[in-house]
Length: 209
Image (tube, rainbow, N blue to C red):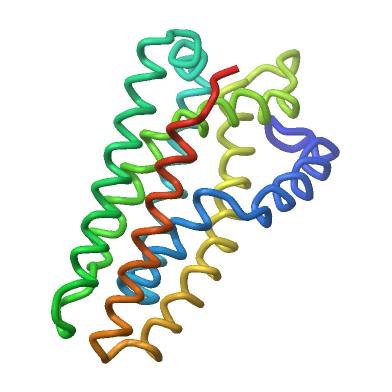
């Protein structure tokens, strides 16, 4: 064995993580929405924010803090509803932007990064996912549990970064081609707002169990 993760375990983890990365979900849809709002650079910045947020969740899970948050109903609910409120605020911003005159500056990469990081960190579903998925590939008897979490989390985050980034860049390219008229700008704003609203509803109806 080289490092804390056994090569056979890693060989089993990589395809499982890739399959999850390729499954359309909240992160992919968020990058899609940011690509429509700000173009390829904003999409990649949002993708980086999501990857960093995911890695933070993995680190907390490895330290045992994620399990505490998931086990405390008050903390779980507070994080969940903060995420719902933030997504609805983003939806309103996208809708308002699309309703205004064309030519206004699109969302900047820095802003897209901050928004993606905030959305990911306020999504308790990520906490539950990390706690349910990663421990299946962590062998406590080998020691260095935190290191195992970080290595597996890095693989998962990297795969998500590549897949979600590709989707976001595609949406960003589409925005560059389609933008320029009031009707198109309004339509892109509505689509982005609909994506963020759908993510908020999805998070609002999330069941902890």
